[in-house]
Amino acid sequence: MRVHYLFLIAALLAASGPAAEAQQESSPAATAAAGADAVERFQPGQGAGFGMDYFPANVLGLPDSTARADVPSVDPRQILGLGLGGEIVLRFDRHMIVDGPGPDFTVFENAFRYSAGSRNRVYAEPGQVAVSRDGVTFVSFPFDSLTLHGCAGVTPTNGEADPGDPVLSGGDSFDLAQLGIDSVRYVRIRDVTGVVKGNPSSPFWDPTLNGFDLDAVVVLPRSQGSPLAVETGNQAAGSASLSPNPIAGSAMLSLTLDRERRVAIRMIDPLGRTARVLGDERLAAGAHRIRIDPAGLGSGVYIVAIALDGIQWRTLRAVVVQ
Image (tube, rainbow, N blue to C red):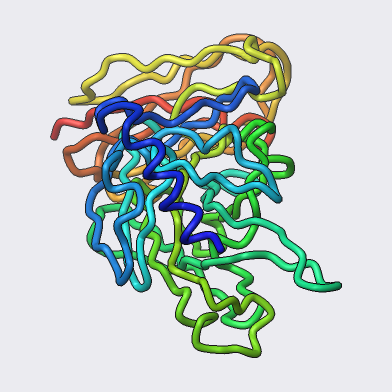
C-alpha cells in the first residue's frame, strides 16, 4: 500500500543528506519544458507531511525521471504529499503560461497502474486544478467526480519521455483555452481525493488513498513566455526586437522571417489579458517593422507575444511609461 511504502523510502533517504540537497531530477531526454519557480503558499491537509524535509525544492523543476506507469515516484526529494483536502499554489516567474495551440501545462503526480484480481486499475489521488493571473482570483478547471476527467493525479508519469511532450510524458495536461484565459502565472492544486475515498463504488476507490502527491507542474514549450522554435529543431525561423524600450511615445517592433509565415502579434497586460492585437496576417520572408502605439495603455510591464503559423514563438517584455 503506497502510503506505507512512501514513508519507508523517506526513512531510508533521511540519512542520505540534508533537505538543502533536495532537487528535481531532469528528464534524461532533452527538453524545453520549464517547471515552477516558487511556491506561493501551501496549506497542508489531513495526513500531510511526506516530503516536507525537502520542501519546496521537491515540487519545483521537472518531474522525477525514474517514474514509470507501474512504478511511481516514491522519493520524498521529488514529491510532496498535500494530504486530504490540502492545497498548494505554484508561481511561474521566468516562463508565464501563455495559451497556445493544444495543452499549455502538465501536472505530474505519482499515480500508477496496478492489478486487482483480473482488473487493471489506476491508483489515483485526484487534485482539482485552478489558474490565476494575479495569485488572488483563481478560475478552476471543471472535472467529473466519477471518471475524474479534468483532474490532475490520474495519468501515470513516464519519466523516460520528454516532459514537454504531453503525448508521451504522462501526467495530466490542461489548456487555458478551455477557460478562455490568455495567460497565467499561478497554478493551484487542491486535493479532492475525498470524492473517491468517500465512494466505495468509484472505479478508483482504494482504502489506502491518502491525498494528492505533487511531483511537478511543467509549462509546455509552445506555451512558454520565452523564445521557442516554431518547428522541431528549427532555431532559425527569424528574429524579433523592440526599440525603444521602455516605451514613452511609440516603439517599433522589428521582425525578420526566414520564409512566408502567418504572423499573429498581441500585447498582454500585467493581468494576462490581451490588451491589443498588433497584427494577424501572412507576411513575406525578410524584414518587417510594426509600429506600437501605447496610447490608451496604462503604465506597466506588458508582453508582446508573437506566434508564427499558429505556434507561440517569441515573447518580448515591453515597459510602457505614460
